[in-house]
Image (cartoon, rainbow, N blue to C red):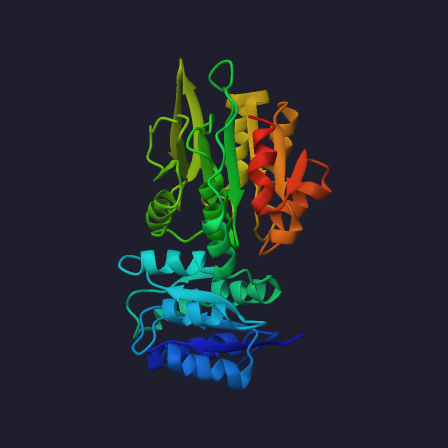
Length: 346
């Protein structure tokens, strides 16, 4: 099956490069380009693309406005954001929360051949988007209208559990829904690993913090893990956990260097299994690939619990499938039912 792609960017040079990169890839056909959001809406109706590559900062109608308009369309195409870090980071994170499937980091120097450097990543993410299930802003709006999560049942003592969450494609949407549903008195510290380009995790953490009863922060080396706080791994580093006496701390580390992702869900889960043992609770959410499988094996071997997101709510049912098919999942549920499932184990 050939995927039909629409390239949306206000830079004529960027449109030219992206068209060439995608047209040269097997299984992809660039059916058109658009210079801004309004132009893109017309092209979508005319060309009916499967996937759109979307710039965010454009005249007339920007990328965020375009996504809002797209959300109301039946059988809307999937979107891969092509964005620069820095000033655009918050816009990119907002787009991911609003339903964009994935993000490709664009070099800031647009009118240079550096744009060709993103070709392999862009092609792969467009192909993944073509297989993804679009889950747009309506679901987040419905989640926002849902009643506040009930308090957790009182425990006889402070919970020794740790909740570790790993996710990739579709992860910002999934984390938004999960963390907004966790109650303020959730008794376990939370650590999060998300596959996303470097330069975006601070913006992700800030947006999640504004939408969650928990404190959500980007990881820094030596940060303490405490109930009521969720720590998001910094892109470009592995997040590991260590214990010194009564203190549970975050460690940021680039080793092992050979992993496909920094942060790696496997590395996080293996670290959690080693330190927390039977008190480790690992959750694998939507994502492409198998990152988290080896980590889930380590958690189960240590006596901990592994949970997975059900296929029915995943943007890409890859990472959870790998864990479930290996017989490692102690339980599975769609996003809107995960908090009750988690509460059985903390």
